[in-house]
Image (cartoon, rainbow, N blue to C red; front, side, top):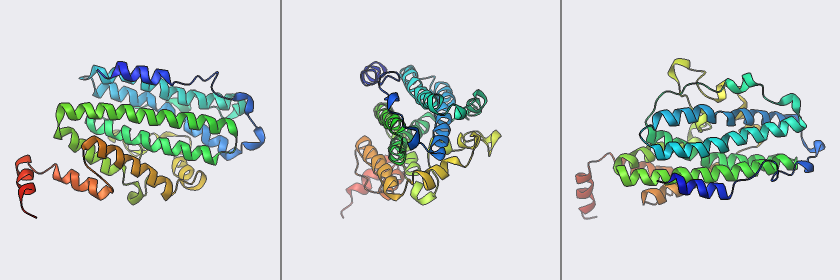
Length: 287
């Protein structure tokens, strides 16, 4: 089982909201109205770990180890929402999300193949790591900058935990797992070509509710995410390259190949659809 070790590792570096946030360093003159509003939107977005956890538990009933890990992931993700709301409660109480605004992002996700979902969230954690690092640089008020850095580090650790479960899946399922990981990896590393913010909270997850079946579509401002990324924190190509590079590097290690580009990962994905015998024959052909 992976859960006991991952629990100990995350417990050892867990930050405390009362003691590890420099609340007394708050400087009201350095917090703009638009910055405060983005804190509210991120607090609501982080609350969507609730329906994501319900989805994970439903679709992973066969895996008690991973389901137990959800207790840690859910706790830490909900704490992200809570610390952002605490920041607003202390310094901008007029912007604290209402219970109705939080509940709006709790809705059913359609069942999906669990390996693909695992990969989506693995890549999503790598993307969030960079989003929050970028947000920390954009903000000018020191307390929220500190909070975003803490959250970013958590997201990176969560990505590492998901990677452990992906390694375990390969050991158990072989090419079936590799195909799922390569397929979703290509999708999630292609945001530069699609022009879309590829993250689980911005993907359609319930056909019966379309088009209001993304987390972002259920926020008070459904267009907030794109504006935050493009116009506010300015998550540009240099930042996007960090996300893509991280996904390719992690998947290279996981799959035992070297992927310098998304195209290389896509070629590998296609090779997995060739029967193993044919792959071996092709490899044996003289150059």
